[in-house]
Image 1 (spheres, rainbow, N blue to C red):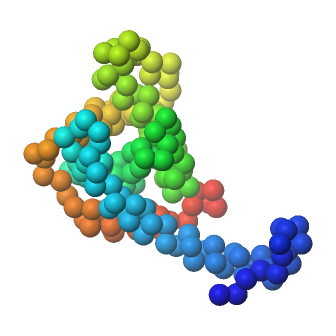
Image 2: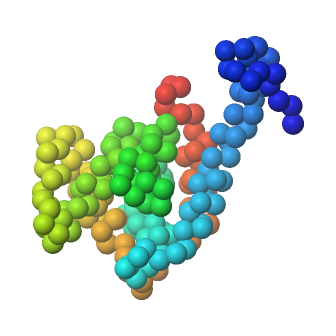
Length: 185
């Protein structure tokens, strides 16, 4: 594989940066494949839960799909907890940052804030404020995020639920991540 001539970016030539751009475009085209591979490896149990991380994602996305959500929202639902392993303290923001170039403002906002909104179900049991989400009460996507948590996230921990397979979602993930990123539009 051809490599650039520089050891410091400030010394790069036009040819160097054209070469890197070619490699980066090839790499970007494979984003969906890397995401799907990562999800496929999420087969360990969420500590204390009855199902794996992968199964939680599949259940949530299956529910969104069966509810007639857009492909964008189904894919976002599939990926909503992808940050659990690498960013446990801000997993929602992590997932949202992966999705941001490819999804609408609404979908991005829902995924970015679902972690806080999801604490509605647990915070009061642990001495926290279950209504912390109310600081966003006047936001235009407030109710959409409540609906996301109620319909897809909090309901998807059932070991007896029949989920679609990860393979069923491949075409949707490929389609969303092959779109021209919003920041180029």
